[in-house]
Amino acid sequence: GKWALSFAQLALGNRAEALTAIVDARAELAELQALLDAQRADKEGLSWLDAKLLRQLGRVQADSGDYGSAIKSYDDAITLLLPDGTDASFNASDPTIAV
Image (cartoon, rainbow, N blue to C red; front, side):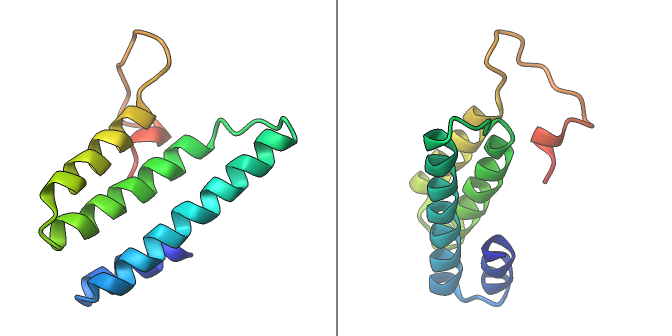
């Protein structure tokens, strides 16, 4: 979807289009999360997707020279992937740390 479009646009050097696509993807994810909240449905699996979108946003920001925002996006992505408990260890096969 829009993550792939953002990735491709950034590779082509089209930063504005890449940013628009990833911002749109995050807005759609927020709508899905709100819908699931309203239905009291489990949305546990969405954190990895939000982290993936944040990492792409960070790439676009860094490519545009906005390093402060890029670092914040990367930090936010890492925060989403941390477990709720105090044990912050992961295995390489954990889906939450996949690309």
